[in-house]
Amino acid sequence: EAKEKGRNTFHFYSQELNAAANERLFIENELRIALKEDQFVVYYQPQIDSRTQKVVGYESLLRWFHPTEGLIPPDKFIPIAEATGLIVELGEWVLQESCDFVVRLTEQNRENNVSINLSARQFKDSNLVPTLSKMIITSGVSAKRLHLELTESMLMGNVEAAIAQLHELKALGISISIDDFGTGYSSLSYLKRFPVDILKIDRSFVQDIPEDSNDMEITAAIIAMAQKLNLDVVAEGVETIDQVEFLQNNNCFIVQGYYYSRPIPESDLPDLYLKLGEVPFKKVM
Ligand code: C2E
Ligand code: MG
Ligand code: MG
Ligand code: MG
Image (tube, rainbow, N blue to C red):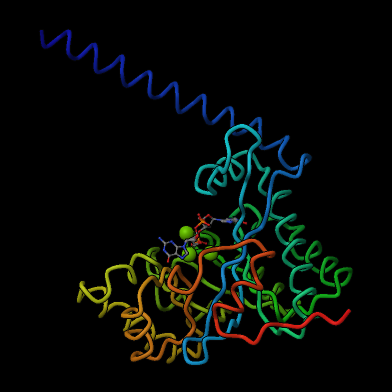
């Protein structure tokens, strides 16, 4: 009986493995088609200054609308795009879209930053800096509006190479942000050596405020440390007014999260501005 059960368990397990492998293969194949067929859209999630309720920037978040599967979330396809190398082309597309988005905002006198996630593969790519440099010139974007989000793990490993790459990016006028801060191996001495500008406190520390006192201590400590190191700090995953107030009381004013807005398509920006209490923008015909 035990033997039978074991066999069944194995059978079940291998079926699951098969399903996972098939899904992976499916996504890999479909990813190649998706770029050509325009199935991707960049959504933008606002970063708000909680003191003024004004948008200070946006994070670009990739969305894949597959013709038969519907919306496939980034966590499902980014790792596969990364493993196959397709992320380089896909990431370049996100960068281009984001530059064009900033230009359109600037034309509306909106001096907002746009923050773009980079994958490890893109960051290591020797073409990244020349590609970005060209993109900045041809799009006419002001480079100081561009922020690149990296994770701590991307900076470890070859630290010297990472520092050199960061300096080249910064020489273009771009700012560097550390995403999901606190979840990686953040050595403080490293942090001081890397030319970074912004820390984004990971959602996992924010989500249980004000119930979890440890998370509150950690969040307050990250903010204090950022201030000491002269870094800006953004809190992500902010869902409640209690969290906004806790962050304000601890000197973190730039917040991103469902409390203010989910990631939205550009066409929803007018609704966002209305919700934030802006006077409706009158179109000059
Ligand atoms: P991330 O960069 O840490 O982005 C934040 C994620 O948290 C987004 O998930 C966002 O929708 C979600 N989020 C924002 N506010 C809240 C909140 O208040 N509550 C909750 N529960 N979630 C919130 P999303 O869009 O599914 O993206 C997941 C991850 O996929 C991103 O994490 C990023 O690592 C990656 N990703 C997304 N777009 C790109 C891209 O263009 N390039 C690369 N390389 N990675 C991307
Ligand atoms: Mg991010
Ligand atoms: Mg994050
Ligand atoms: Mg993340």
